[in-house]
Amino acid sequence: MKPVIVVHGGAGRIFKEQEKACRSGVVRAVLRGYGILKRGGTALDAVEEAVRSMEDDPHFNAGCGSVLNEKGEVEMDAIIMDGKNLASGAVSAVKCVANPIKIARLVMEKTKHVLLTDQGAHLFAQAMGVPEIPEEKLITERSQERWKKNLEPDSNPEEFQKFENASVLIDT
Image 1 (cartoon, rainbow, N blue to C red):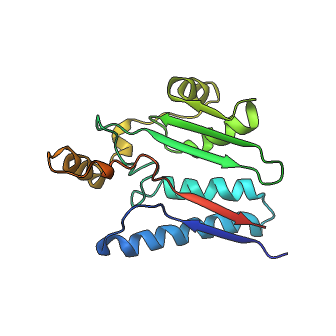
Image 2 (cartoon, one colour):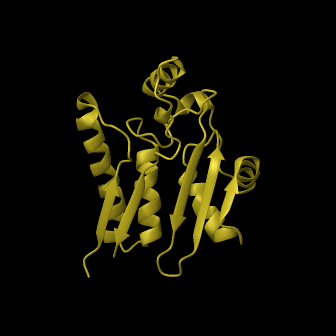
Image 3 (cartoon, one colour):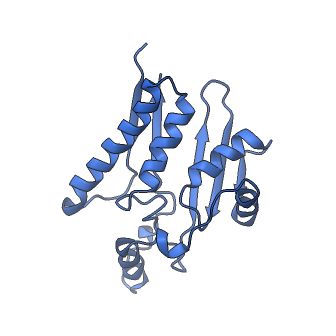
């Protein structure tokens, strides 16, 4: 059976000047995930790699480029699921990591839990050797501008889109 991978780059508005970079980022994520499948890798490996690609791309709002919370901080969420056995792992409100999808997968594979959040997720990531990065490396000019705009008295509070993460569907 020929492997198939489907990637979407989030649920936020893409402005005309960002369209080309976002499209390139999605294609890059697809190719990285598909490459793993073509080499005989697992669907989980492909999913993690495709999501990592988008978390590392500042044009998306997962990982580097995340939407900032009300305090101007990066808090990220990620979830991964194994379709074969329906196991899943998730993290929420994680800070100072480049790839929350990695921690979500570790939650699925190394614990009996489904979700770890905030300090629990942080302590678990440290115990698993997931490297920390300074928060500033995750904040882009675009995310700061968006956050400042949301502080204006007439702004639309719905612009705080905490659940605007990338997701991936794999069919192998």
